[in-house]
Amino acid sequence: MAQSTRPRQRASNLATLATAKYIRLITYRRTGDAVATPVWFAFASETIYVESGANAGKIKRIRHTPRVALAPCDIRGGVTGPMVEGMARVLASKDEIAIAEAALAQKYGFTRTLYYGVMGFARRLVRKPTWDSDYLAIKLTT
Image (cartoon, rainbow, N blue to C red; front, side, top):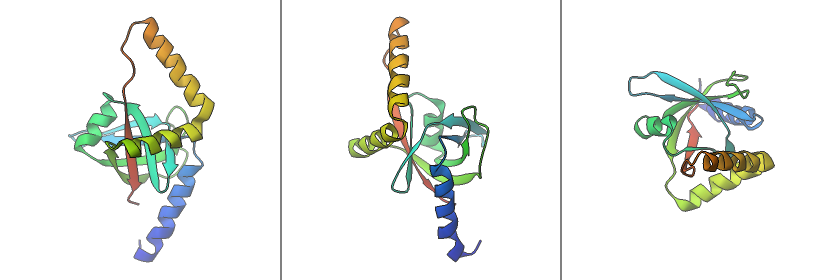
């Protein structure tokens, strides 16, 4: 692909992802095996933010292999658009975590609040500890 078409292609990829409700996030094991997971996501600027459990496999995989692939998908992970590549990192800055939380809250609103309310209640019923979250920031490379 010519250099001059890359910015247009990236903009097209961002526009396609922006209209999706879920993305299929593919992370990679140390062996190179791909692991796909449908996740909620939100944009702030040109960064894609994803929230996940602090001990989730995808967080562990990204800590050692930041390369990811993603595509718009349905709730079950069925791909509905083009696959793109990116680089992910786990957020450490409280300021950037606040940006990620705000972006996700704005996109999913009451649905997200209800989901975490029900999950919190269910965890208390079975006496599990509270949910610790980590946030990912993904920048597209294609």
